[in-house]
Image (cartoon, rainbow, N blue to C red; front, side):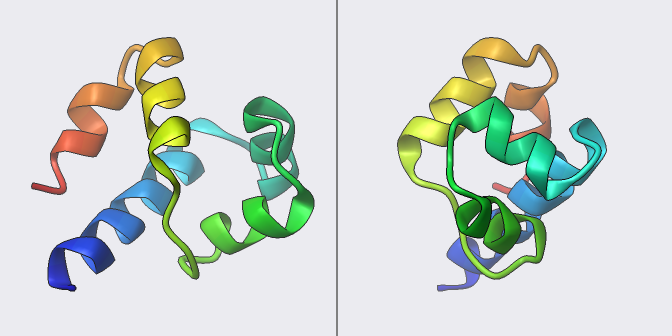
Length: 69
C-alpha cells in the first residue's frame, strides 16, 4: 500500500507540474471532471492506460513518474 500511495502522490505532482488545472487534465486525458479532480487532489491514482498515455505523449513523464519507485 505504501508504494500505491507514493505513486498516487507522484502522479498528482506530475499533473500539477504539467497542467494548469484539473479541467486541463480532464480534457487532455478525456476523463470526466470528477476523475480529473480526484487525481488533482491526491485522492485517487490513475489506471494503467492514463500512465501509459502520459508516458507516450509527454517527454518528461517516464523520468518523473519512475521516480516514485
